[in-house]
Image 1 (tube, rainbow, N blue to C red):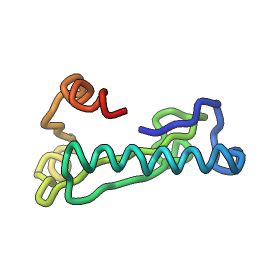
Image 2 (image 1 turned 90 degrees about the vertical axis):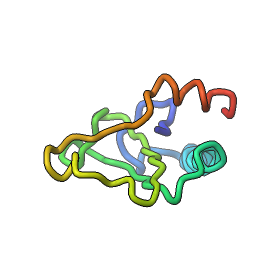
Image 3 (image 1 turned 120 degrees about the vertical axis):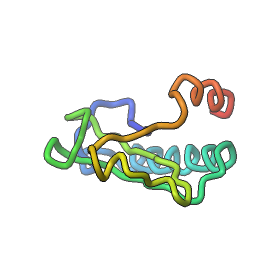
Length: 99
């Protein structure tokens, strides 16, 4: 997840320099994830507002989700449940020195 330090709830409230930093950091994080995790692609997106799925209302953030061929399974289709095959603690240890 990429998020500005300042508490702003919309892209229109970011200055040009904040927007450039936001997108530059997104690019840099995507590059680290590419090198460390070797995904086949990415979902990169911003949810603005509660009805759009923003989990942290009032604070803009961007999700970077690495994807691999065949990583869709029956869990989200059948039971609206997501499966993460690696713990976030393990992923943190793997990635922390790259940032």
